[in-house]
Length: 325
Image 1 (cartoon, rainbow, N blue to C red):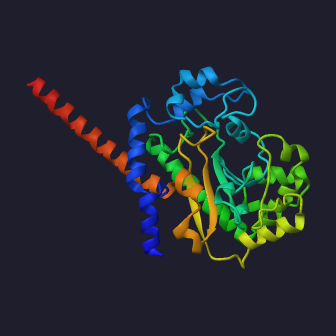
Image 2: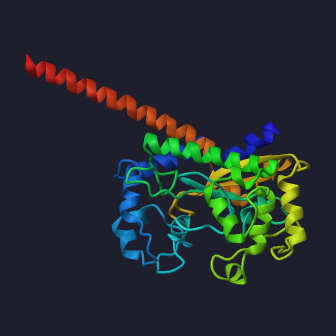
Image 3: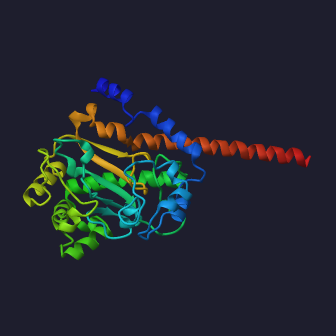
């Protein structure tokens, strides 16, 4: 397995540190802001509006270049940001600043055909409007402040917690306010297990939810759409998250700006059978970046920046001393 992993790393961008570092450096050379939070809060609207001119004026067109990115009014690149401030369709865990959810669209699509773990696809996003300096980012490949780096690590940890909660089927009382609010609205007892509630939320999706963009479609290992089959949904959720689940490895990853159709940072987590780790699905290998590798590189960038600031500060002190004499 180790040899296969090494072979993969040489051809894949997923966890190739050299490739990721070089791409991050190229973005940093063009990025003219201190971190991302202030620019995000000054740029991205909560209103459903045409974003084309603002997108270009903010210079975001230099970074977000995907052909799938929509800028017009309605279903556009700010939909996930707008939805984060509302009650999401399938919340799994929430804290004061973040929500872990099952995404709409086709969860697990990039795991490829004949994959039985697509329901494992979760995302974590920021939902905080606490203040202008509370971290919120466009994409983790862009430069970050130390506070934004801490927030990245926090979000990665929340995905792990959400998976543990699903595996243990903890009561909704342990899953945060957004989950409890959704349960109350559905008339569901707060002592219900989160794994059971995940199934309930999928089954509660309306025809409109399934059909209007971005829609929702859950596929099983036979590539069958089981969204409306409660028995099948419950079976696959229990197989993936339950006590008897197959040995698996969790992927915690993002798509870079060139592949993203949404411009609020959203970390993905997938479960893949451990036996496939040496041969990840092509869409994952080529279009996603490993968050652990990103975190490592960003820590180094921050440390280098701190050292540089110390040196510059020392030089300034020495210059002023010389002048004083």
